[in-house]
Length: 212
Image (cartoon, rainbow, N blue to C red; front, side, top):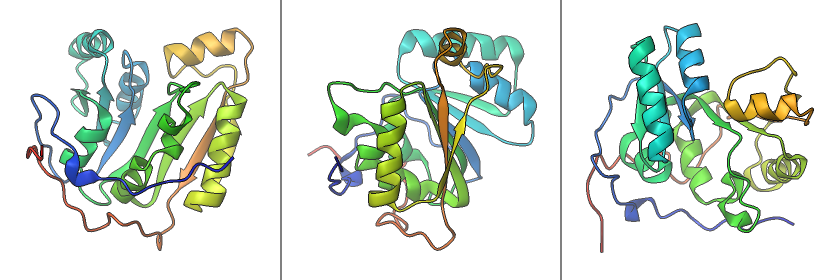
């Protein structure tokens, strides 16, 4: 079933609590970074790339923050916020080089909240650089299959589907699923240079409140 996509109402998004703006320099982004295992690995392995790692759950964010303080990667910025308003208020068009969404909540009772079914996904694409990538990983075959269908029929984006090797250890969830012998897959979604969205000229709100 194809999920209908209404237009995202970016201007209605209120800034996250304690919002702090960032510069307009290119970044990598991780949404739902959990305790930060992938974020810490990525920034250690790619010291020239800056990663903003967003986590909404306080307990997980504090665990990531604590580990970051111990390891000290200067190219990692942990953010405690809901990803949608933070992205709207903080990010500039075509700022993101790579976006990682690793093992998101499959929302079994609310399919409209899955990432590629959300109006917000169009806004996220507007923040992605031409030739930039979104990496979406899941251990649920139906989640991947639905995302593929949305990519083909709604978003019309090229992608590559990959099986994640049993030796991969990017997140605590990934380790657990692979140890169980579950099939873990990822979609590497690319943004063509000519791709356009309705938000390509939308500038960040930079913490402004737009409550009605």
